[in-house]
Length: 260
Ligand code: CO8
Image (cartoon, rainbow, N blue to C red; front, side, top):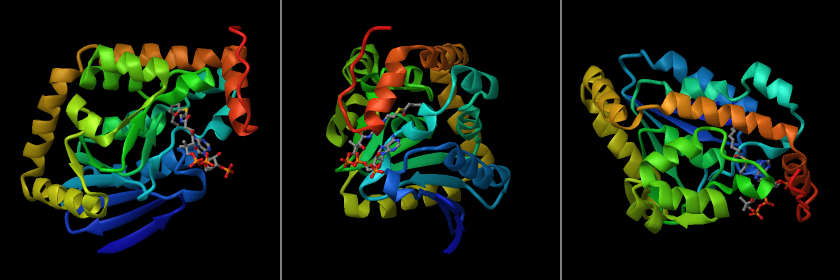
Protein backbone atom coordinates (compact mmCIF):
# COMPACT_ATOMS: atom_id res chain seq x y z
CA UNK A 1 0.00 0.00 0.00
CA UNK A 2 1.34 3.45 -0.88
CA UNK A 3 -0.07 6.69 0.55
CA UNK A 4 -0.10 10.15 -1.03
CA UNK A 5 -1.34 13.12 0.99
CA UNK A 6 -3.06 16.14 -0.47
CA UNK A 7 -4.72 18.59 1.85
CA UNK A 8 -8.16 17.26 2.82
CA UNK A 9 -7.95 14.10 0.65
CA UNK A 10 -5.66 11.14 1.34
CA UNK A 11 -4.94 8.82 -1.56
CA UNK A 12 -3.86 5.21 -1.00
CA UNK A 13 -2.98 2.56 -3.57
CA UNK A 14 -4.06 -1.00 -2.72
CA UNK A 15 -2.85 -2.95 -5.74
CA UNK A 16 -5.24 -2.05 -8.59
CA UNK A 17 -7.58 -0.17 -6.25
CA UNK A 18 -7.24 3.53 -5.41
CA UNK A 19 -8.75 4.59 -2.08
CA UNK A 20 -9.58 8.28 -1.55
CA UNK A 21 -10.26 9.27 2.06
CA UNK A 22 -12.00 12.57 2.74
CA UNK A 23 -9.99 14.08 5.55
CA UNK A 24 -11.36 17.29 7.05
CA UNK A 25 -12.32 15.94 10.47
CA UNK A 26 -12.76 19.34 12.18
CA UNK A 27 -15.54 20.19 9.70
CA UNK A 28 -16.99 16.64 9.50
CA UNK A 29 -15.60 16.42 5.95
CA UNK A 30 -17.79 19.29 4.74
CA UNK A 31 -17.13 19.52 1.01
CA UNK A 32 -15.51 22.78 0.01
CA UNK A 33 -14.13 23.75 -3.39
CA UNK A 34 -10.63 22.65 -2.41
CA UNK A 35 -11.82 19.14 -1.53
CA UNK A 36 -13.80 18.89 -4.76
CA UNK A 37 -10.85 20.06 -6.86
CA UNK A 38 -8.34 17.86 -5.01
CA UNK A 39 -10.50 14.77 -5.36
CA UNK A 40 -10.97 15.39 -9.08
CA UNK A 41 -7.30 16.34 -9.65
CA UNK A 42 -6.16 13.16 -7.89
CA UNK A 43 -8.56 10.72 -9.56
CA UNK A 44 -8.94 12.09 -13.08
CA UNK A 45 -5.35 11.28 -14.21
CA UNK A 46 -5.88 7.71 -12.96
CA UNK A 47 -9.12 7.23 -14.89
CA UNK A 48 -7.35 6.04 -18.04
CA UNK A 49 -4.62 4.17 -16.15
CA UNK A 50 -4.94 0.48 -17.11
CA UNK A 51 -3.38 -0.45 -13.74
CA UNK A 52 -6.24 1.17 -11.81
CA UNK A 53 -9.40 -0.92 -11.89
CA UNK A 54 -11.58 0.63 -9.18
CA UNK A 55 -11.87 3.73 -6.99
CA UNK A 56 -13.17 3.66 -3.41
CA UNK A 57 -14.31 6.90 -1.76
CA UNK A 58 -14.60 6.95 2.00
CA UNK A 59 -14.59 9.30 4.99
CA UNK A 60 -13.94 8.58 8.65
CA UNK A 61 -15.69 6.16 11.00
CA UNK A 62 -17.81 9.06 12.28
CA UNK A 63 -18.58 10.87 9.08
CA UNK A 64 -18.54 10.31 5.34
CA UNK A 65 -19.32 13.98 4.69
CA UNK A 66 -21.76 16.35 6.45
CA UNK A 67 -22.62 18.19 3.26
CA UNK A 68 -21.42 21.08 1.20
CA UNK A 69 -19.36 23.53 3.25
CA UNK A 70 -22.11 25.86 4.45
CA UNK A 71 -19.55 28.41 5.68
CA UNK A 72 -17.96 28.62 2.23
CA UNK A 73 -21.30 28.68 0.40
CA UNK A 74 -22.77 31.38 2.62
CA UNK A 75 -20.12 33.83 1.36
CA UNK A 76 -21.04 33.34 -2.31
CA UNK A 77 -23.32 35.49 -4.40
CA UNK A 78 -25.88 34.18 -6.87
CA UNK A 79 -23.86 35.63 -9.74
CA UNK A 80 -20.63 33.97 -8.57
CA UNK A 81 -22.27 30.54 -8.31
CA UNK A 82 -23.91 30.92 -11.70
CA UNK A 83 -20.93 32.35 -13.59
CA UNK A 84 -18.33 29.90 -12.23
CA UNK A 85 -20.85 27.00 -12.15
CA UNK A 86 -19.45 26.45 -8.69
CA UNK A 87 -20.25 22.72 -8.47
CA UNK A 88 -19.13 21.75 -11.96
CA UNK A 89 -16.17 19.76 -10.60
CA UNK A 90 -18.68 17.28 -9.24
CA UNK A 91 -19.85 16.59 -12.79
CA UNK A 92 -16.24 15.66 -13.63
CA UNK A 93 -16.16 13.34 -10.63
CA UNK A 94 -19.48 11.73 -11.56
CA UNK A 95 -18.26 11.24 -15.15
CA UNK A 96 -15.14 9.25 -14.17
CA UNK A 97 -15.40 5.99 -16.07
CA UNK A 98 -13.46 3.75 -13.70
CA UNK A 99 -15.91 1.92 -11.39
CA UNK A 100 -16.24 3.77 -8.08
CA UNK A 101 -17.60 2.55 -4.77
CA UNK A 102 -18.62 4.67 -1.79
CA UNK A 103 -17.80 3.22 1.63
CA UNK A 104 -20.04 5.22 3.97
CA UNK A 105 -19.77 5.28 7.76
CA UNK A 106 -21.53 7.87 9.90
CA UNK A 107 -23.15 10.95 8.40
CA UNK A 108 -23.73 11.23 4.65
CA UNK A 109 -25.78 14.42 4.58
CA UNK A 110 -26.60 16.90 1.84
CA UNK A 111 -23.66 17.02 -0.56
CA UNK A 112 -22.18 14.01 1.31
CA UNK A 113 -25.21 11.89 0.43
CA UNK A 114 -25.05 13.25 -3.12
CA UNK A 115 -21.34 12.40 -3.44
CA UNK A 116 -22.13 8.82 -2.39
CA UNK A 117 -24.97 8.78 -4.93
CA UNK A 118 -22.52 9.74 -7.71
CA UNK A 119 -20.62 6.52 -7.06
CA UNK A 120 -21.64 3.30 -8.83
CA UNK A 121 -22.84 1.75 -5.60
CA UNK A 122 -22.76 2.39 -1.87
CA UNK A 123 -21.60 0.07 0.88
CA UNK A 124 -22.84 1.32 4.25
CA UNK A 125 -21.54 0.72 7.74
CA UNK A 126 -24.26 -0.14 10.25
CA UNK A 127 -23.79 3.34 11.80
CA UNK A 128 -24.36 5.17 8.49
CA UNK A 129 -27.11 7.75 8.14
CA UNK A 130 -28.24 9.40 4.93
CA UNK A 131 -30.13 12.63 4.50
CA UNK A 132 -30.84 15.67 2.36
CA UNK A 133 -31.38 18.26 5.12
CA UNK A 134 -30.91 21.32 2.88
CA UNK A 135 -34.51 22.45 3.45
CA UNK A 136 -33.54 23.28 7.03
CA UNK A 137 -31.18 25.88 5.56
CA UNK A 138 -33.71 27.25 3.11
CA UNK A 139 -32.00 25.32 0.30
CA UNK A 140 -32.58 22.28 -1.89
CA UNK A 141 -30.09 19.55 -2.90
CA UNK A 142 -27.54 21.06 -5.32
CA UNK A 143 -25.25 18.21 -6.34
CA UNK A 144 -27.81 16.01 -8.10
CA UNK A 145 -29.72 14.72 -5.06
CA UNK A 146 -33.21 15.58 -6.22
CA UNK A 147 -32.55 13.54 -9.37
CA UNK A 148 -30.34 10.62 -8.35
CA UNK A 149 -32.04 9.95 -5.01
CA UNK A 150 -35.48 9.94 -6.64
CA UNK A 151 -34.37 7.57 -9.39
CA UNK A 152 -32.90 5.19 -6.80
CA UNK A 153 -35.51 5.12 -4.04
CA UNK A 154 -38.62 6.48 -5.77
CA UNK A 155 -40.72 9.59 -5.37
CA UNK A 156 -42.41 8.78 -2.06
CA UNK A 157 -39.23 8.28 -0.04
CA UNK A 158 -37.26 10.99 -1.87
CA UNK A 159 -40.03 13.53 -1.21
CA UNK A 160 -40.18 12.41 2.42
CA UNK A 161 -36.42 12.92 2.86
CA UNK A 162 -36.07 16.14 0.87
CA UNK A 163 -39.18 17.84 2.25
CA UNK A 164 -38.76 16.86 5.91
CA UNK A 165 -34.94 16.81 5.99
CA UNK A 166 -35.02 13.58 8.02
CA UNK A 167 -32.20 11.05 7.98
CA UNK A 168 -32.45 7.42 6.97
CA UNK A 169 -30.43 4.76 8.79
CA UNK A 170 -28.42 2.06 7.04
CA UNK A 171 -31.08 -0.65 7.39
CA UNK A 172 -33.78 1.54 5.84
CA UNK A 173 -31.33 2.70 3.18
CA UNK A 174 -30.69 -0.90 2.13
CA UNK A 175 -34.40 -1.69 2.14
CA UNK A 176 -35.05 1.39 -0.01
CA UNK A 177 -32.37 0.45 -2.56
CA UNK A 178 -30.06 3.33 -1.70
CA UNK A 179 -27.20 1.09 -0.57
CA UNK A 180 -26.03 -2.31 -1.77
CA UNK A 181 -24.90 -3.80 1.53
CA UNK A 182 -24.91 -3.01 5.25
CA UNK A 183 -21.67 -4.05 6.91
CA UNK A 184 -20.51 -3.94 10.56
CA UNK A 185 -18.62 -0.64 10.89
CA UNK A 186 -15.34 -2.30 11.82
CA UNK A 187 -15.41 -4.34 8.59
CA UNK A 188 -16.61 -1.63 6.19
CA UNK A 189 -13.31 -0.73 4.60
CA UNK A 190 -11.97 -4.27 4.38
CA UNK A 191 -15.19 -5.52 2.76
CA UNK A 192 -15.40 -2.60 0.32
CA UNK A 193 -11.74 -2.93 -0.65
CA UNK A 194 -12.26 -6.65 -1.24
CA UNK A 195 -15.23 -5.92 -3.54
CA UNK A 196 -13.17 -3.25 -5.30
CA UNK A 197 -10.30 -5.71 -5.75
CA UNK A 198 -12.74 -8.19 -7.31
CA UNK A 199 -14.01 -5.54 -9.73
CA UNK A 200 -10.43 -4.48 -10.48
CA UNK A 201 -9.49 -8.08 -11.23
CA UNK A 202 -11.79 -8.07 -14.27
CA UNK A 203 -11.24 -6.36 -17.60
CA UNK A 204 -11.35 -2.63 -17.01
CA UNK A 205 -12.89 -2.14 -20.45
CA UNK A 206 -15.66 -4.60 -19.65
CA UNK A 207 -16.24 -3.10 -16.22
CA UNK A 208 -16.56 0.37 -17.78
CA UNK A 209 -19.02 -0.87 -20.39
CA UNK A 210 -20.98 -2.80 -17.75
CA UNK A 211 -21.38 0.21 -15.48
CA UNK A 212 -22.26 2.49 -18.37
CA UNK A 213 -24.95 0.04 -19.48
CA UNK A 214 -26.48 0.04 -16.00
CA UNK A 215 -26.29 3.84 -15.94
CA UNK A 216 -28.28 4.05 -19.18
CA UNK A 217 -31.20 2.46 -17.37
CA UNK A 218 -31.32 5.40 -15.00
CA UNK A 219 -30.04 8.41 -16.87
CA UNK A 220 -32.81 9.32 -19.29
CA UNK A 221 -33.30 13.04 -18.85
CA UNK A 222 -30.80 13.25 -15.98
CA UNK A 223 -28.77 16.05 -17.60
CA UNK A 224 -31.82 18.23 -18.00
CA UNK A 225 -32.84 17.35 -14.45
CA UNK A 226 -29.46 18.31 -13.04
CA UNK A 227 -29.31 21.54 -15.07
CA UNK A 228 -32.77 22.42 -13.76
CA UNK A 229 -31.77 21.58 -10.20
CA UNK A 230 -28.49 23.53 -10.46
CA UNK A 231 -30.09 26.69 -11.81
CA UNK A 232 -32.82 26.66 -9.21
CA UNK A 233 -30.28 25.89 -6.47
CA UNK A 234 -28.18 28.90 -7.41
CA UNK A 235 -31.32 31.02 -7.66
CA UNK A 236 -31.93 30.41 -3.94
CA UNK A 237 -29.01 32.77 -3.29
CA UNK A 238 -31.41 35.53 -4.33
CA UNK A 239 -33.77 34.68 -1.42
CA UNK A 240 -33.61 35.99 2.13
CA UNK A 241 -34.49 32.58 3.58
CA UNK A 242 -31.42 30.78 2.19
CA UNK A 243 -29.16 33.53 3.49
CA UNK A 244 -30.94 33.43 6.85
CA UNK A 245 -30.75 29.61 7.02
CA UNK A 246 -27.00 29.52 6.38
CA UNK A 247 -26.27 32.45 8.72
CA UNK A 248 -28.34 30.83 11.47
CA UNK A 249 -26.36 27.59 11.12
CA UNK A 250 -23.05 29.43 11.41
CA UNK A 251 -24.30 31.50 14.36
CA UNK A 252 -25.66 28.33 16.02
CA UNK A 253 -29.25 29.65 16.36
CA UNK A 254 -32.67 28.71 15.00
CA UNK A 255 -33.42 30.31 11.62
CA UNK A 256 -36.27 32.80 11.27
CA UNK A 257 -37.67 32.19 7.80
CA UNK A 258 -39.85 34.91 6.27
CA UNK A 259 -40.87 33.25 3.05
CA UNK A 260 -39.04 35.93 1.08
N1 CO8 B 1 -20.54 22.91 6.44
C1 CO8 B 1 -19.63 23.56 7.21
N2 CO8 B 1 -19.29 23.16 8.43
C2 CO8 B 1 -19.91 22.07 8.93
C3 CO8 B 1 -20.87 21.34 8.20
C4 CO8 B 1 -21.17 21.80 6.90
N3 CO8 B 1 -22.04 21.15 6.11
N4 CO8 B 1 -21.30 20.31 8.96
C5 CO8 B 1 -20.63 20.38 10.12
N5 CO8 B 1 -19.79 21.44 10.11
C6 CO8 B 1 -18.88 21.88 11.17
C7 CO8 B 1 -19.65 22.54 12.30
O1 CO8 B 1 -19.92 23.90 11.98
C8 CO8 B 1 -18.68 22.37 13.44
O2 CO8 B 1 -17.66 23.33 13.31
P1 CO8 B 1 -17.22 24.23 14.61
O3 CO8 B 1 -16.63 23.21 15.55
O4 CO8 B 1 -16.22 25.17 14.03
O5 CO8 B 1 -18.47 24.84 15.15
C9 CO8 B 1 -18.04 21.02 13.15
O6 CO8 B 1 -18.27 20.74 11.76
C10 CO8 B 1 -18.65 19.88 13.96
O7 CO8 B 1 -20.07 19.90 13.73
P2 CO8 B 1 -21.14 19.88 14.93
O8 CO8 B 1 -20.58 20.53 16.14
O9 CO8 B 1 -22.42 20.41 14.38
O10 CO8 B 1 -21.23 18.29 15.18
P3 CO8 B 1 -22.49 17.48 15.74
O11 CO8 B 1 -21.99 16.10 15.99
O12 CO8 B 1 -23.13 18.22 16.87
O13 CO8 B 1 -23.56 17.45 14.56
C11 CO8 B 1 -24.26 17.18 12.24
C12 CO8 B 1 -23.27 16.75 13.36
C13 CO8 B 1 -25.67 16.68 12.61
C14 CO8 B 1 -23.81 16.49 10.96
C15 CO8 B 1 -24.28 18.73 12.11
O14 CO8 B 1 -22.94 19.18 11.98
C16 CO8 B 1 -25.05 19.24 10.90
O15 CO8 B 1 -26.28 19.27 10.94
N6 CO8 B 1 -24.33 19.65 9.83
C17 CO8 B 1 -24.95 20.25 8.65
C18 CO8 B 1 -25.63 19.20 7.82
C19 CO8 B 1 -26.26 19.85 6.61
O16 CO8 B 1 -27.15 20.66 6.68
N7 CO8 B 1 -25.76 19.44 5.45
C20 CO8 B 1 -26.26 19.96 4.19
C21 CO8 B 1 -25.40 21.08 3.75
S1 CO8 B 1 -26.03 21.96 2.33
C22 CO8 B 1 -25.58 20.97 1.04
O17 CO8 B 1 -24.93 19.98 1.17
C23 CO8 B 1 -26.05 21.45 -0.29
C24 CO8 B 1 -25.77 20.43 -1.37
C25 CO8 B 1 -24.97 21.03 -2.44
C26 CO8 B 1 -23.67 20.29 -2.69
C27 CO8 B 1 -22.51 21.16 -2.91
C28 CO8 B 1 -21.16 20.48 -2.71
C29 CO8 B 1 -19.97 21.44 -2.81
